[in-house]
Length: 416
Image (cartoon, rainbow, N blue to C red; front, top):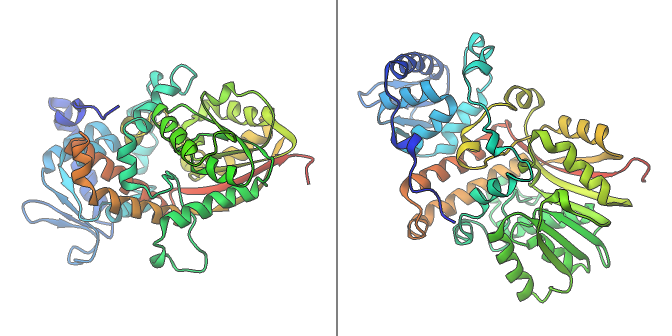
């Protein structure tokens, strides 16, 4: 699978009376907002806006086509903001630094009266992208089946596409060994799930097989389920090469269809693909297959509860272009769902958002350094800008605390 070759909502600048009026309003709101931010917004005519326009060390946002940018922002909101970057209406030497400024001020960028009208003007989720059993595989394919080679270009040798866990004894600037940090993350999950010789382990969301391999090395018998045909193919190759085919089974299967009993269940950043409407089903599945004294460990990207409530029905740029059907829960929501739908309890939570910000910074460096190879795979310049923005957008969220990532341990209510 490859990225689309046509991007109609990006290649076409909004036009008409409605777009012109929306552009005027958006331009005024944007200029007013950035005048309060620690940023340099640079216009072609030499105008520089920001809290301190003379500060040349502030993150820069360079507007190349202000009129087009305003038209997209006015008609598309935050989706238009992202599409304007894809179209080249604006750029930034360090997109993550620029987006961090905006993300840190997300509560105040839009005037309060407009925030109260949010549901009237923001896009809604397409029905075709709800994570029902009939839709989910297509949603997954649009991201994870793009190309295994694409992911190999910017991931480390473990092919782990989730937050690493760097050494607590070293300051962040010295976090360089991404592969070691990914293995440390996996080992912590397996340790908390008490995976060892003979453990019957269910993994929901295979990735490219690194966790299954490390569990098998401990002597576990692993069943892993995924909806990505590309990931499954490469994971099976890696399992075979490691001589672990007798211990690891990887099925192309929806988590809702899993049967059997398991001593441990683990899932690394798959819950974001479950969807708000299906969280009860997800945890009920874990409850159903987990042995009486079993343990479940999740790695989950989260957002603050009040922001989740405000945005859970909003269709975002990330959902439109990167993760169709995606939804980020809050830890409070996860605890509430577990309590009302299962006999499980949350025993432990570990916050590690700073580690994800650094993981994403390393991915961006590798992605940008392999631009020629990405192009050679057939991904056009618009796709490359889209992914640069996606990785930078994610880093910004973790950098300012708008996003977090947690390890969450679940056991049965009566377990020690």
